[in-house]
Length: 163
Image (cartoon, rainbow, N blue to C red; front, side, top):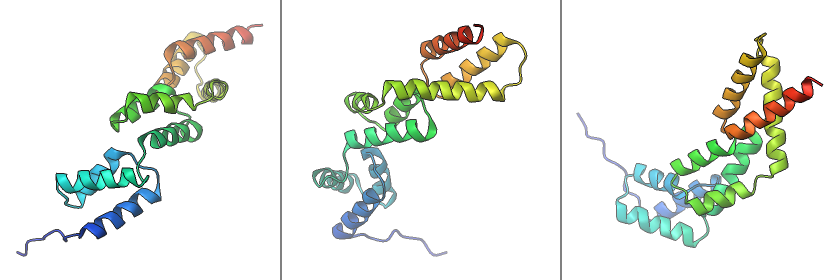
């Protein structure tokens, strides 16, 4: 049986492929590092390529964190806790995470939570109001919204509903 060998990439080919990979969409260092290792590169090559990409502006952790947080919030309606956990999983620094979260408008954040609550209220057919409220809260918390914010919003909505 013939042994498969990895194709050797020259330094120029590595840089060109890495440029293309980073230009396609915003990437963090960890994603690029994983991709470079998947190409069969050794640690020295990987780290020097990453350093080069950072110096050329192809990788910027703060920019990545802001784009990631903004996108996940606006498109997927994720809460801050879920965004934080995902950024931590990508080895993003606490400074960059804080900067990214500061980009999320508080008014829009509350509106997003209220929208999720209202959609979930219509979806859940439970008759018992306490159970229904609990299910909605658990859902919102699982989406990454802070539990105290979720409960405060639900209490406020429930008191308005009773007026």
